[in-house]
Length: 176
Image (cartoon, rainbow, N blue to C red; front, top):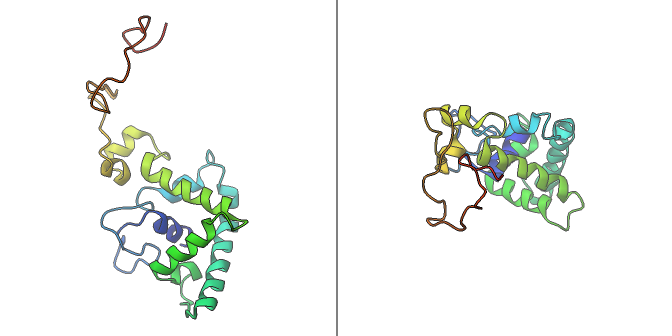
C-alpha cells in the first residue's frame, strides 16, 4: 500500500473503489497505480525489486517523522504514508526528492519508475497494453498499430519532415 500511495503521489489517479486508501483520488482517470507502477517496480528488468521492502519501510519511517513534526495523528489501520492526506504526501515526497536529501537518488528513482509505468506501460507489450486500454498510453493519445500489428507513420510527429532520409535507406526504413 505504501508504494502504491507513493506512485499515486507522483502521478495521481482516481480511487479504484470507494474505500481505497492508497490512491487518494485527487485526479480523474487512472494514474501511476492504474498504469501498472507496482508491476514495473517489481519487474526483474528494472532492478528495483530487491529494494522495495526497504524503500517501503523507509517511506513509512519518514512519514512517521513528518507526522510527528507536523502534529498529524496517523491512522494505525494503514501504513503511515498511506495515512497522510494527499497534500502532506506531496510535501513529504518533495522533501525526499530534494537534492539536499542524501537519500534523494533512491526516491527519485522510485518516482521515475512510477512515471515509466504511465508513459510506456513497460511491464507489458505496447500492443497488449493498448488493447487493454492502458490509461497512460491512451491518455497521451498513443496510436494503436495497424491491423497487422506494425506501426506506420504517414505523418510527421512535428507536423513536418525534419530531415530527408539518407539516399541508401531501404524501403523498410533501415540504413544500408
